[in-house]
Image (tube, rainbow, N blue to C red; front, side, top):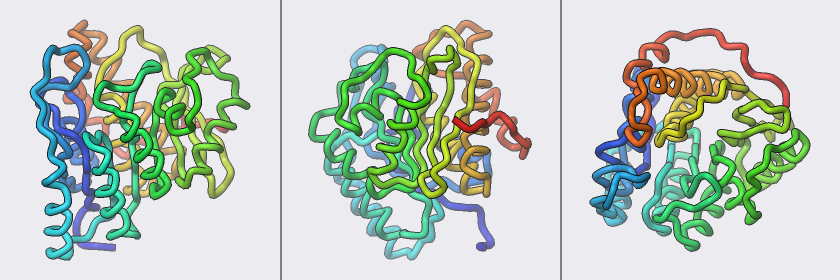
Length: 287
């Protein structure tokens, strides 16, 4: 135990507008009592989801000197959490952070694509390096598109039955991480859910949520942030899944009720107070 809050190195992009990346990671984790040390991989004027030509600056040459400075300071980290990488070589920088703080919870959100397509910033070289990086992670949080990319399989847009989902989760676990969560899954039963796998216990979980007919950027970043914060605060894996799912659902429903432009992201600011209450959650079920 330390006399300070848990500390996380958050290695992620920073989009100035649109509520994604470090713009949501920092306040979300901070609301949960986690000290965040942002390590930006790139700065962007907005996210890349339909807001016009983006001003974009790669920060690859910043990350390694930042890492070396933190080592000289002998900082302690309880979490290493990576998201958007703008250059394949940044995967090696994230791996260096994970290796330098081996006792920290290593969370990799393999930001590569959505809705069956890779993002325009995601090259084949980045995909290959991301497959290597997840081998160093304790927790990964892909969406269905990213899960398919990691497994080198075609994306399947149809709803999935539980056995194929279990197979997918187990194969992702075989890549190295102990805990796997696939977000935004449509089940063959008609439910929408986050599904998870605890490789150490060989246990499969799912947390259902109510579908809202709108898609917002940044929700994956928020989910991974809450999951990370919850696990660092001592939640079990399925309870952390439930906490992350409930918060994202709350933020989406709040935003949908106001009818704002979906490109502007979720109005999570109105919901951050929910994270300050250590609510007991029960919405997780065996898959």
